[in-house]
Image (tube, rainbow, N blue to C red):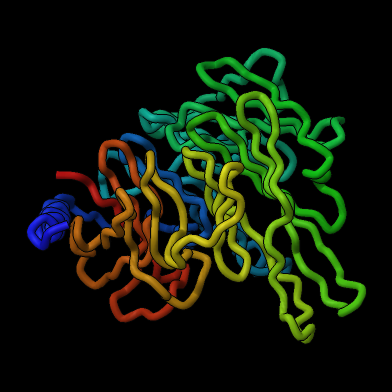
Length: 381
């Protein structure tokens, strides 16, 4: 290749990057009045296809707290309620339950911004849907009475409903699309048993109707005496399950570190790639196996978007927020400056319409804390 084409390619890349600059407006999403804390850093945030954002916040129960103080029954009491920021507004709206089931838990959003979730108390729950702030019961498909809303896909069109049942896996799963439910076959023996001792299961689904289950189990090395957490990925696609090899085992090669490190299913892309965190991040998909991505990858957005930054669950800020598109990492500041007094730390989601949801902390912060972190919505102009 001659120098000129190479220079032209570089120039084209710079122009493409410049074209991204300042194409969005950034809105700091304020916590609702009266909330003592919200779940911005706990992987409990949803970005709808229309740009609406939902999460959960805790509100102090003043009367109950006053009663406890008088009787010595205990400390502060909180009620958990979901909130939504609609239409790019900085002001949150609270999603209420009922007198009998006052607590609310958001579990996803449909493409039009309808919020899916659950209202509950200490003994019962009811699947629900909120349009605006008006709640109604979610209509479960025929034959699925008593099942629970569990997850929604990124496009909000496919629901995952789960219920503890009598199968070998001890958890029934069904995908619902367009009101039609399809019960998933029982996962293979290698996927373990839900609720079994020394096992932990997490699951996610994507917009292609695929479901990924991560089984984490404790394994003790009899020779060296340390315990490791080893996992398997079970992927449901095209009517059947595909099972991975064991995840890479992370341990101190000298045998002096006997801690059993946690393992988390961080994200699941629309292309079927699973992102796992265990003392570092790695990915898996059937055609590739396990591999290590860029250290700054924290999740997946719409289509082929890859999300970057510092994982919200981490304390020390190790990377600034970014979005990978066509193999190129674009810092969020290329789309819009962070709100005054804040810096972006994590890209949390993107939509087909161009919305970007980010986590931000005060400009001087070196760590992510639930008290200081806030959501920011970048909206295309």
